[in-house]
Structure formats: structure tokens, C-alpha cells
Length: 483
Image 1 (spheres, rainbow, N blue to C red):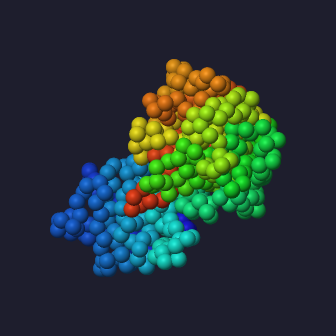
Image 2 (tube, rainbow, N blue to C red):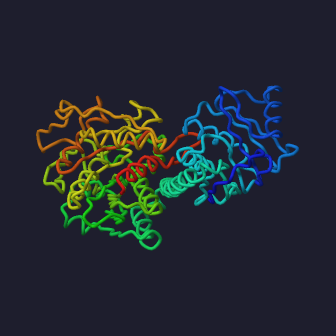
Image 3 (cartoon, rainbow, N blue to C red):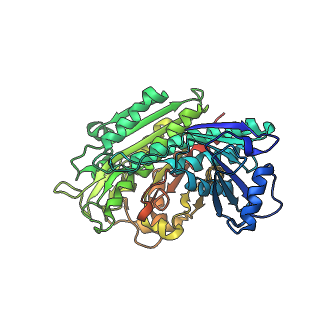
């Protein structure tokens, strides 16, 4: 996608050369002037009842006399925020993205960097098109160029915002594509190949460790999950070195269960197909590394992805088995469907070697977080107030909401085991919290946070598919650490 700024004509927007013109107007207050012809069309649409000044409302006007663009969409924004602007643009794009328009110009908002970034992400969401395993899919949207028409005084800020947005969209597209692929395509080996491809395309350093290497490292917890599958496990290490050599890196750890049957603790059949999305944490790490590399941020960033299938077989780990993690701590596996924490804990121990400034793990970890927060906020857990505040600020800046959850010591008692240092589950009550408490036992040597994206990484139903979240949150977090 080609994102550009465009000088806003003093005479009005009717002369902007584009296939379609999106005009965003506020729901309340005085209407801004967009120039005589467009102002007249807007007044007529409001008077005739074709458009209401209510958030989410829009109207499509083809062939408006005196307007150079062949199509005009008027869209109403709830308020002046970047979030509301993004929603209004998304509403307008729905009316034009399936048509022949190749170039769309957008007018409205406050022309800030935040609004420009929101515009880019709205476009990315609208035009993402999955067709890898669906030859019969409708053609991809024709839209190839988006211009944000802004005053000259705002051009520099808007250009910066579009650049950040374009990089985030690039990362989200990679995350969506990896997650949407079925599990017989997006295997652990495939994820390793996607990481290795970024050595040439984005200048990353990448190492993909096989089962033997993981055994040598003592990753008994990670490998216990992989036992039941014919697919070989991989442990992916990605490094972006944009900062000084002495700068401690940020480490992102992504859960990469490419398919989760639950193992011996088998899941119910309905909707099990959606367990291909259990590697969305890994996909978001791949996407964030791409975004950060494209932004050329002056920061050191490490991505760690433990990836495997969780399958039942004669070799699969059984409920009641005890395994030894890379840290030396033993784990009684009471439920093989609580496998994400088993692969993440060894990755967290591996992260120690980088002497990180901060470690953030990202995982579709628990159904309990969906019950707690639904599908809007990701769950954020951290014992470190400063790190949690940075991540919440990044979620706000990236329009990628998260909500901080508790990590009180009392929850830790639920993980007691008679036969190992800990159990891998703590019962139904507070399930997302006890999962985070399990991970916390492996994080004493660095500032740490955990983001549970089980409710936000993908959608079900008619809109089934990956969202690309939390790439915006993670990218803004890394940006905040860059020099």
C-alpha cells in the first residue's frame, strides 16, 4: 500500500484527484468547511435524511457534480480522537473497498501523527485479503494508494504517522497471514522459515533450534508438549540489532502452538478448528520484528518463539506426568491442555542469557481471560508497575487496548503439587491469573509482563480470522524504548 500526504487545497477538496474521496466530519459542534461543492452536497445529505450526524453513520455519493473524485463518502466521527477517526474511516472504506477505486483520498481529523497512523491501520484492516488456500476467493481490493489531505503546516507530522502506520500494517499482515493459514501449512518448520526469510529482507539475525538442540539445553517442559506430534518442534531466536552493542535488549516471547488438540486432555470437537490460532502470540512476535525493522528503530530487540503442535498419541505426555523445565524446576502436568505455559516457561529461562531490559510474553493462553475481558481488551499481567504503565501507554497509542489484571501472591498457592515443585494448573477460579503466576516463577531475573490475547488475537463466526493484534501495542512499546 502506498501511503502519502497531500496538500489540502485552500479552495476546498473538490479538486483533489482521486478515485474516491472520504470526508470525515464530527458528530457534534460546528461543521468544518470542505469547500463550496462538498459543503453543498453535505448539507443536502443531512437535510434529505441520507446522513445523520451520529457516530458510525456514512453515505456514499457517486458522481457529485463539480467534484473531481468519482465517488464521495461522507462519514461521521464520534469525537476528535484518533480512535473515533479510525472508526469513521473504516466505515467509509467499507463502501469503496470492493469497488474499482485504486486511489482514495481522505480529509478530516486533526491531521496529527496519531490520526495519520490510525488512518493507515484502518486501511490495512480493510484491505487485508486471505486467499492462500482459497482459489475461489473474491479478488483482492483494487485499492493501492491512500492520500491524507492535510494543511501544509501538518504535513510533516502526518507523514511520520503514516510511516509508523504503514510499518505496523506490514507487521499485522504477516501476523494475520501466519495465523490464518491452516495448521497443515503453518507448521513449526514454516514459522522458522518465515523468520529466516527476514535475514535477507530485514537484516535480522535468526537461529532455528531443532529438537536435539532443545534437548541439549534441557528444555524438558517445552519438549513434553511436542511429544505427541509428528511435526518436529522448533525454537526460533530472532535478533534485531538497531541499538548500541551495550544496550540491553527488549525480549518478546510468543507462544507458538501451531495446533492445539489439548493433547491427552482432549478438547471438545466443536470449534476445535480455531485452535490453529493458538500460535497468534508467535505470529505477533514475527510481525513486530518486521514492523520494528521497517521503522529502523534504534533499539535492540529479541524475539523468542517456542513452537510445536499439542497432539494425542502413544508418545504424548499424560496427566500426572512430571517434567523438568530448563530452569531445573519440576512441573506436575495435571492437564495437558494447559500447554502454552509449559513451552513459554523454558523460553523465559532462555531469555536470561540476553540480560534483557524487559521481557514480554504474548500468548493465547487461557479461555478464562475471554470470560473476564471479552474480545476488546487483552489481559496484561506484570508485577512491575513501571513496565505495566509503559505497556498500557503503548496500548493507548496503538489503539490496541489492554487491561491490567492482578498478580497477588495468594493466587500462587493454587499451583501447589504433592509431587513436583508446582502443578501446571490451579483450578477454574482465576484461571488466567494462575496461568500468569505459573509464568512468573520463571522471571525473577528481569522485569517481566505477560499479555493474554486469547480474546483479541482472532475472531470467530462470519468474520473468522486473525486480527493482527497486539502488533500495534508491541510496536509502540518497542518504540518507547528506542533512542
